[in-house]
Image (cartoon, rainbow over all chains, first blue to last red; front, side, top):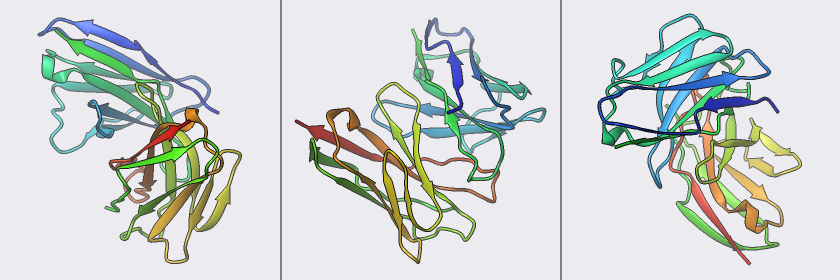
Length: 117
Length: 111
């Protein structure tokens, strides 16, 4: 199957700093990418949807100025957590698909464990 | 938006068949039903997708009744490595195909 790669797999940062997470589709062009956050023992929570070349659409309650999403190419999307605080510590997961139809399979990255100290 | 309801957890033993049922009473005409598997500290992995009746692949079967208000994921002869969280998703076909995850079912397979 298609591969979606996230980098880094884990990161520890100091409170107040910014962290960038990359999501790459390695063997297909990702028209749409999704970013999720997952806290321990909880389900994935959709943060935003991004289409290549356009602004991301954020879910209700997600601060767009804190979680900056860039989808500049069909193979790369980035999530930047700005001025991170301990409560932003979580497991961040990206997903990519080549179309917007639900019968187009979505592929997920391996996730990034963010710890803010 | 279609919402899904699954059992929070299930227990099974190696070699048994496991059936996980998901309710989606508000499924729309153009919505697909997709199941994902997630291991701890990993991204979800696609298992199977269907629209109606029965779909089977090398990993699982998906049973969907005629009214499509529910679906059942069937895992034949589970092993310890099938211990994971299983998510049932109903497609947001009219909203850019975004995937909304419900609570999932935590399956524990015991020896």
